[in-house]
Image 1: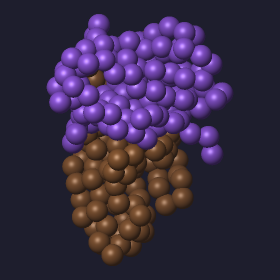
Image 2: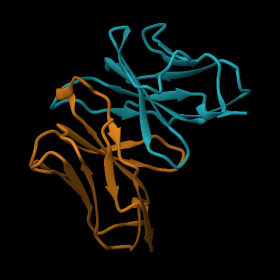
Image 3: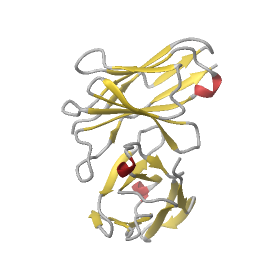
Amino acid sequence: EPEVTQTPSHQVTQMGQEVILRCVPISNHLYFYWYRQILGQKVEFLVSFYNNEISEKSEIFDDQFSVERPDGSNFTLKIRSTKLEDSAMYFCASSRDRGLTNEKLFFGSGTQLSVL
Amino acid sequence: GQQLNQSPQSMFIQEGEDVSMNCTSSSIFNTWLWYKQDPGEGPVLLIALYKAGELTSNGRLTAQFGITRKDSFLNISASIPSDVGIYFCAGRNSGAGSYQLTFGKGTKLSVIP
């Protein structure tokens, strides 16, 4: 069964460093998302991306964050200057459709980001 | 933003028992999704609901989209040890022009063999 794949599974970085989290969405999907989950808390929306542009973002997704689809398969999340509070599990997700009756969002296994 | 109240927060049940959990919202959703998350993994979609009143099953799992569009429940029948995990509800109101999912805080299920 097709799945969303994320690399790396774990990333440790120093505060202030830049990190890039990588995702390969399901191949025929058109809508891409990043969510995050701080340890023990609920999953929170960061950003959605369609047709090579951001379609929606939350207040968490500030100027330190950016997303890119550099080629036909990868979808990346960049954090420019990491802060301690950026430590979380970051999930990439994708869906084929976006609508009332068709959309099913599939998540990757996540990248655990630890900022020291 | 929209808030989802998910209950119970955790539950311990004997293998073979039925389980019920629910989510309520102060505002209307037009999509409800139920996910299961195993430790260190991403949420896995269990059931998707798109219409008020809709009742959908997936094996031993049954979920319903409440008539008021402000609530949903998930039932698991005849629980087995592999049902252990955290179950999340997620809702969306795309009628407000937003496609982001709002997640509940999760129900942690433990099954005692």
